[in-house]
Image (cartoon, rainbow, N blue to C red; front, side, top):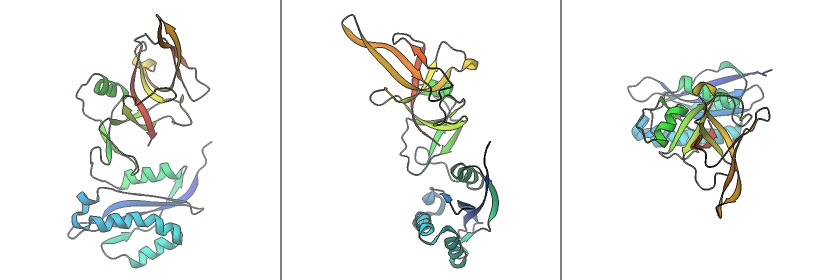
Length: 258
């Protein structure tokens, strides 16, 4: 059973000279006073010469909320903001999870510019990602997804929606996940996006699993004896594959859930 609680959210809006008010951030608080904030990051493209001021304001928002409490800080903002900046009236919202809720509200109300590999990553299906990074095919992103501010991006990273429960609780069913093409260093213990080439699309050909391997000696050479692809959810079984088999390909390394 999913537990919900009541909360409120506010939008931070900016009115640039000669332009209508635009939402640049979301502030969300539950009935216990816990809160989350999410602000756009394309300040220079959005505000030009005013970008440094707005960026500093967004950075300062959470510090002030911790110092004064979210309710008091919002009241202070409402009293001190000019026509350029405003906090909208509180709107009620039912919450299951603060992090997911603030992300949902941000996506609904804030429309930042797409800055490829600076603030956004391309989203592909697992099949298209395999073609893009394993077969060097030119493909278009289904869409561009904004990532958290603390994640350093590069052009080998991409987003895939993962379905299924085999990697719960770390990767919930339906999650958007960031992957990096290829694997840096040892594969052992890492979560990998894998293509099982001996299974049809409808049979779950693409999956995320934790990589384990057993080593042995063959023809006087040290080789993998067996590859084990493990789920995190104990309700599901692991896959055991021979190293020399061509039945699987590694598409990318898991970075994080968005």
